Length: 305
Length: 306
Image (cartoon, rainbow over all chains, first blue to last red; front, side):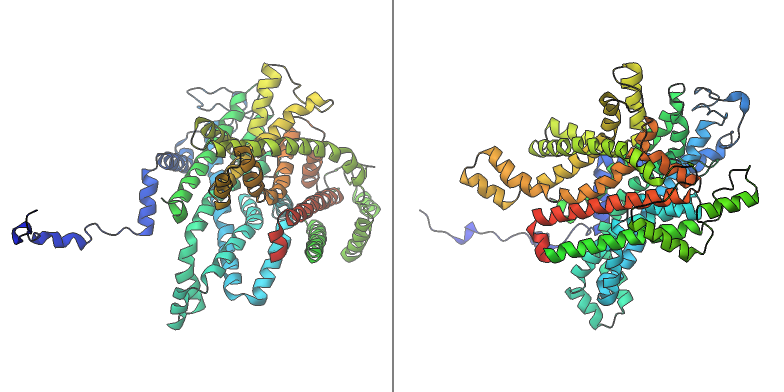
């Protein structure tokens, strides 16, 4: 065994000291979420589909040559053709125009019906959780009782009172959906309100408003975005059910649920009148649902490997 | 436990009272008159009708009468179906709706749980993917599209089942299946998630290390723990089955309670809407109360924390 000499050692090249330097820019939370979603094929496809449907809902009725409420007696119940792409209904109204006008109502109700109760829930749940005391007591008792009331009853009462327009349906959906999110937000608020960063903010003299919205809310928001995305299909569903049993938007305004209702009475003779709007509801709900799942996987830190 | 039961019972009572009161006042302050649609009635005649049905006096008085009758279980008589009491209509239609709902419920519960367990046990294999695909599809197709589709395939094309109506066991098959598919799908999904959570728990590893046979681990350690969070979802399920049954009844012409409910809302039949709403509320609230109790019995943790 030969002795170790100084020749066995060579000094490191100078550049190797650079290994500690961070070469790539750091990735923020939302950037990371965006990157994950973009790399997920299902999410991209479903999001593209949702975007396409929304764009069509906005622009298709504008460029369509038939009005959604123009009746024409001689042209009732025509099958899909180059003239009427989705055919016509029993009053001769063009179904292509009606499907896209219906899409406006259905999507609008889906979106508002998911966001409005979420905002109400975040505000009330946040206040209840942060301040506690009698306010918390009051809000939680209201939720305890309100959650026992079946949503059909809210819906019926609101429809009776405000008539059957899109706003009444959103209100009805909001009445029955806000309690879940309020409960969740309250729980999260309790988790966060005694953490160090909240204490630090308070020590620096931040107001309760600032603590809630600037410091605690961003920690909760991810979860709530997921619950919005999963509430959209339920809101669309609820609207479709209501329209189907005859408590939805009033004619000549239409929605996918109402189109299905009208189509269902004669579907043996004219199946396209039921199955075209039915397919639109199903595929749109599927797209929202799959996108919501992908969003949850991307946002939830626990599911990351 | 006694305190817990009492508290839930008290909340249930308040809920029912609140629903009845809100419904009563909201309905009575609605614009319009239930007899205005019958054009042949002269104003004096309408007045007499209002008096006959006790709709004339001051609201507070009407409310007290309504509450007194409610305590005796009497919902009054319908304004539109002349000579029929709301109780009579409930008695003749609710058993049909209840049978439909119960059949769907009884089918969907075991099948949904079984599917969930199978999917979770075979995670990542073909059978898991096909069950997940089924549950995603089952959740996204609205029940009225599904109902028409099944009716078209099995009753019109294949002609193996009756198209509509409700007179024999055979007639109940299609409506029940239609109603059950949605809830099987959602239960499969829920049970799969719950099972996957349980499978990675330490006590499952311990059981495996002790050398227990696989079926014993699944039965005693996994299913028992995974099934507990399923119980509160059963209460929500009742409401969604109820909603779904209104639609299914309409498509298959089932003589259930749904059509009466919707018609009464449309035609301002006060007593009918009020009676049916309160009746459904009592039904749902009671079901939720019972499910809460079962939950408390099955999971001791609930009793301790509340």
